[in-house]
Image 1 (cartoon, rainbow, N blue to C red):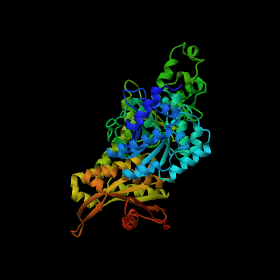
Image 2: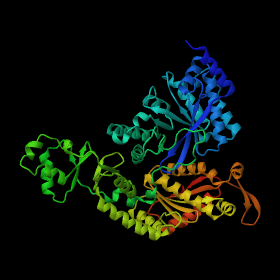
Image 3: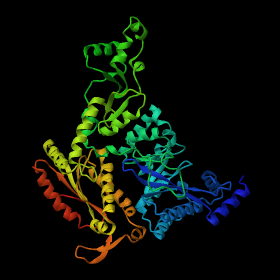
Image 4: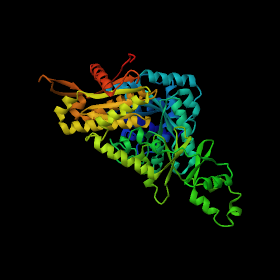
Length: 576
């Protein structure tokens, strides 16, 4: 039975709005920026309803769940705006409140309107502690939020009642993986396999994963290597009423300037793997017949399970008792499970970093797989060093000195390579609008900071998809894109740039939405925030014979793109 004191505590908390709002960053591991903040609410520290579990449990039993939930939302939005936090706000919402009769539709939009926060920057995070029985009603509720401009996240996949059916029925934009599957993932192969499966599901459902509960660098390293983009946990920052607006202990981004030719694919040799169920004699015969074979990968159903080194294996049979001692062993039992595993599109510098960070372990060989985890071949450290050295020498000669991105010579080489390949691709010209006014008002040092931020954003957003990013000069960039989803990737660039733009300005200009300065005719006028224009040209190599022809057409498209205010993607629709 409900204790009277708990009901009194709840009443006092709601009347006094005595709630503490904390924020924990959600980090975009690719762009090195904070993608959003999850708002977490606590009761007063000196009362029995301090923990959210107790607070909301009492509110539910007292029939005041909706009242408390709306109060939490309002305070979270208020504190988020007051601190002028960048990026997205993740609002925890209990699905049960959406189904209550006293739930007031439009309350969240009303709060946002009063405080000047766009619903496009808010993610409704469904936190479930009880089973959902009416999925039709929940789907309508989720659709209602989407119609108003919100995105939707599903919290704690794999914990409690929150499961795959929720995912399939509600089709959220984001899914948060419960910390149970993240804890110790760097040492737990079954957890890694589970996460790979979830990654595949997320791709098929066009959903973004967020890993929760990351507490160690090793967990972060593993997730980063598996290309789980969004990350959250104590390793980055604890919940705080004054959260950081940047994160210091992220993975180095030295590899972000690599293009497709200097990934693991460039050192991959198609060395045939051996089935983990094969007999020992089969591998022994192979090592004897191939004297240059130093290391071989074991596979099960096409996926690597370990490696066996030539010297280690042959040493087992160097004495007269070797055959009798190991005759009944399986190859899997004799294999090394700790191996460096890289995807074909893993940048070589990132791969080099992994190797140098594995202290005390011998890693001369790398197992290379495709995006599905299927074995493709082997690479070795000598080829890795050779490729890195050759590319660094060329990049140093032809890189843009401000951003380190490939400059005009490397851009022309990349264009020529794609034209010679004979396959369709997309060339895109990317530059900043209102940048001259910003440069004049804030000075060239701040202008350079903006250009560097754009360079990092472009490369970090597009790198994993195999796209090329070059810096023509000033605020002009060249993108060479491929695949069916390049347009989606460009839109991600525009959305992320829009989220970061206010941070370039002083508080007064930020509040005004821009700055006042002189135009090219010397007239004083207001210039809105810097925006990004992307002019995209689908290229059929049969119709474009040179990089110059592509450049000329892109310049024309760029002029058209800049006529549209705001962050904008213009696509050439005419067949070339």
